[in-house]
Length: 237
Image 1 (cartoon, rainbow, N blue to C red):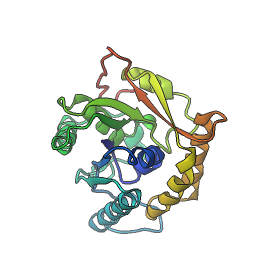
Image 2: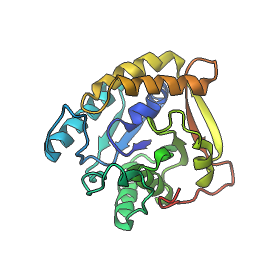
Image 3: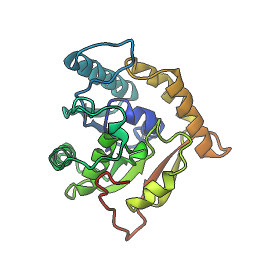
């Protein structure tokens, strides 16, 4: 099971891994913050219309990738009245919203009890990404082993990735070689017309090449070492 904050987060960050995993496992995606006001400047819709468009883009991506999933109805940071600067200021998480996110994750996982749940590392300190990460860590048992992905585009050329992973106890890197599906991943990002530009796709490619260190292209996950306990950070990175 893979959990993202916004439509496009999972496709951007671990789209290649998902394309590989679904060939040998049942992969289900959950996006929590389905109510949104953010879009590219050429899209000027109200919350309801834009939220439907973003959910439809996510549905089209899942269909093309041949995976199942759902988009939730939590309001994103802009809908909650935060500015672009405030949403990445490392604000403390609202307890009620954290509880709602944790319950949504647990309810989605309950019917099939995943072996693994993949959550955002919350690079860039975006409050919605922090909520998803910490809600997953705080959720009751039933999510399997927790691993964390490097959130793009925030992860691109970011020097504090390892430190952020260590803060929550996820210090073991796991690299997934996505060379043979990278072009497919990049092509599918064009489905997010209200959200992404060529610059996003360029950063995704550059990050994948950097991680692979001369071995094609890769995505990187972070996991707790055996016996190490993950900690909820409550947004204070």
